[in-house]
Figure 1 (tube, helix red, strand yellow):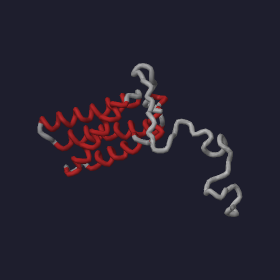
Figure 2 (cartoon, rainbow, N blue to C red):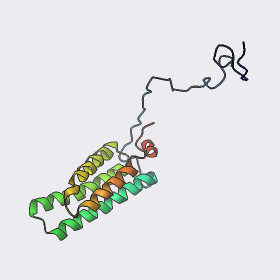
Figure 3 (cartoon, rainbow, N blue to C red):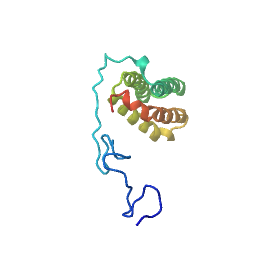
Length: 154
């Protein structure tokens, strides 16, 4: 007995012959099973930061601006020695990790994420909010899905 729909049989399924139709070439996807993510090892010396995706370049540039603002804020606010040294070390770390991220090292992306999270926690410090907003903006650009291939994930 037919339901009247073209291509539909009475058992409730589509009457396509086996080996054809939408499930013919399912590739590596199987419903309910996670596929392994392949990662190619990217060497530090084998990558050119100028070839990085535009979103990563924007992220590194935003981190550079945040580091510059942090350095300026440190000099302008007249902090005591210990907080000033911590602030300068944090600014240098942002610049260094931004460059290493452009060299396709995923651990630098993770470290920058942690530093950005710490920056979000420091939003209670007055005059520090621009660095926090820049860190959030850089995080968004850094974790865009298209950047995964730069770090070797497929």
